Image 1 (cartoon, rainbow, N blue to C red):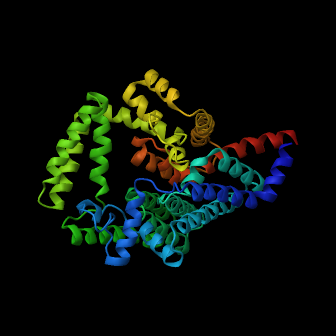
Image 2 (image 1 turned 120 degrees about the horizontal axis):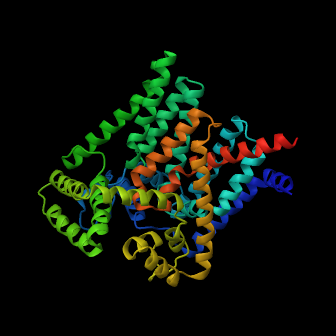
Image 3 (image 1 turned 90 degrees about the vertical axis):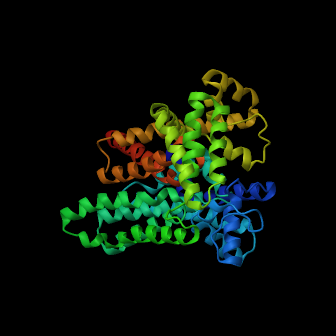
Length: 444
């Protein structure tokens, strides 16, 4: 039975994958629910660059938000601008994102085939993922940078592996190039390429091939150039004004909420923002927000650590309630996220409140996704501890996944998992294929 299913999927994978992407695209087309809160930033940035030559990521005619001159790196805004100069529709951006998604699946199949995993097995696994991991297809149909970021991160991963396996300037050059693109897509990515460069440095010292790391000089050059541009615009040398926002409004706020309650955390944050809004310049504003956030965290380091660990688990398991609610254009009402509800109401009361307000059909989908994500997370951990897997590949997967979890996992959102989802999928495929292949050999 399995062989027949695998044979069918191997033959029809691409038509089925295209149909699934089209189904989600047309759902987005008919519902019109293609925007999240951040979408206006990217659309405004594209429009402002076209009309004013500015990377300002907020509506130009509205009251000025000083932080938003350096709030979003430019790559996704530029992509929107290019696509809409050809077809002036936000749906053209979504169609392009679906194409990027299909290319990413092709890249995964190609890489795993080179690593001696049967294409039929890979395609069957990826088809299961497309069905059971709906957050991916949903995010193909939001005006958000996550699918672009996923594509870039996957290419950076692939060429980082090739740089180890077959060291040459082509591979290190492409790895460095994609890390630069990642830095210009999301601020969170700017240290990841440096981490991979350090690993390759150890490898290349042993091989006496240090010159191959020269392309990675693009990373500090990009970082310094972008920080210098931001200093020219705002007067302060920094990479992104997202950093103090994240430190104060998420990391510090949630830490305070765990200790003193949500109302107190909101009041404290509001008081800091009064000072920040009265700051005479961007430099002082940035420092007020950043230092206040760090101070609150330092006051309760164990609570902060505990909350981070909870966020890391939620990062891996979140079934994507937020994604579905917005994609299907459902009125949230009292149907808030389970992670948020548990953190504010406690485990038992939070669970009861979530279940009492959740639409039954959506609850069934979320439960299915939760079970799948749990199994995926379990297999991912098993892969990391498996002694039979490729050593460098395992290190590389761990670095990519742990970096994003450590950087964004405090929020515990499925959306942040999109960027490194292919690495989690590949880890699961490696591990399951090794077991399946071993049992098959024992039976033959």
